[in-house]
Amino acid sequence: MERLGLYCLALVWLMLGACGGGAETGPIDDAARDEVAPVPDAPDESALDAEIRDPETLGVVRIALQRPPTVDPTEISLADQESVLVTDLLYDGLTEVSAAGDRLEPALASAWTVNDQLTEWTFVVDSDRVDPRHVAEHFARVRDETSAAATIGAALVDVSDVQTVGSDAVRFRLDRPDAGFAWMLSGVAFSVVGESGETTGQYQIESESDRETILTPGTGDGPTVVLHWAETADDAYDTLTLGLVDAAVAPPDAVHDAADRFGAVPPARAITRFYGINADSPRLADERVRRALIQAIDRDRLVDEVLAVPAFSLDGVLAPTIAGYGHSGCGLECRFDREAAAVALDAVADDGDPPVVRIAVADDGQAAVAAAIARDLEAVGFDTVVDELALDDLVRVIADGDADLFATGAVAVASSIDAVIPELFASDSPGNALRLRSDEVDRLLAEAAVTADDHARWDLLNEAHDAAMSSALVLPIAATRSSFVAAPHAQHLAVRADGSLALWAAE
View 1 (cartoon, rainbow, N blue to C red):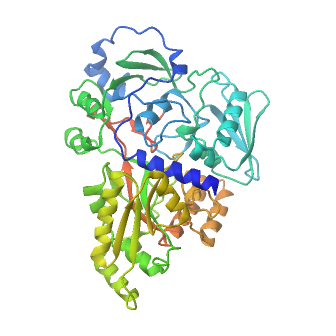
View 2 (cartoon, rainbow, N blue to C red):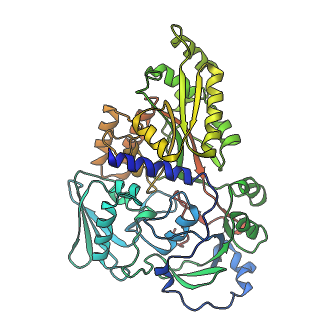
View 3 (cartoon, helix red, strand yellow):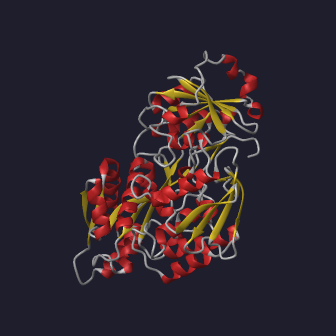
């Protein structure tokens, strides 16, 4: 239960972080700063001429954004796109998801193998960039972390041992099979900082000033990246509208303007919002009541009129940009149908008063959504009470089962459904705050864990997602959109599901 509490806390905190504005300003990590060369004169404005701006020859990419508060992979908020973007450029993990999200690619690991039981994963490490012994020590430390990196530690909960093999490899031993383990390690939070704080990623810091940081590719033929530091997200977007940069991490309210001005429609990030429905509540024990509750909610209106961040409605917990997404969800079973919900509720409540639904949320942004949900529920015959709680109290209420409906969400630790479905829905998962107990879901997850073929495994995970959604324990809401906006000449820049950028010609 202790790990469940920690994971719930981290999960809710990450979801809340996605509701706010940009990150606070702050310096790049001191260890990374040690490598910084003397600050040069401002780059020549010829870097913005027509030839450089041609999509096929974009040799310099200029991005305006707020300076992230940290670029330490184990400390960043995965909901903070500035942190994710910069950290991914500076540091690599063992693997990386392709820009299209359809394959797993080498990063610090040039190759990897797994035994027949899918319990021992061996990664050949690029020892020119990082010592394999340091990699093993890093993951052993992260595995044991129970506070700042709780969500990362939970993803490594089945790792029993990490050690070097020979002079250039690292081996992970797992307590049970996990065919998707190499995908799990692709997340930005699993990136490795060099032993002395040096960068390990595809980019290195060439120079830095208060105004900008220039990154050059360490290997390969990627473009130079110039990060223009803005005081606010609004300032970053203004810099883009003035034509001084190629892209920006923009504020939420700029998305509609960006669509009109640039034709830019940001893709979904692997951040989803949903509400848990407490089947242990006597008021919601009847599955028909839970289904009426779900059908009563106008998710499209919530997204268009209430959510404080750009998003689009979902019928599940998976963002469509995540690797392995298979259009699974609750489908027609949870479509908005106020009349059907009212009829169903009347049929169930013939012998008693309408159910009183206690909705537990935290912070002003969540309260607005909860109030809209309450109005929809009351329109079909429910009575509602909205409890706005301090975050610690919300976590306690969720853990104790004292709320009927509670706000939560998921920020995937890696850009694959391998990082979402087992965490949220396995009966023994520390992240199963929904208390879902399903033999069918557990059977599908167990089969997926021993299915090495990615697409076959993802099919099983999508089936598990469907089965979990059919339990009527989840009120799906939305997936958050990326905040990265590019000018027309730079819209070929690929944004991954985690919010990082794929800048390499090979992609």
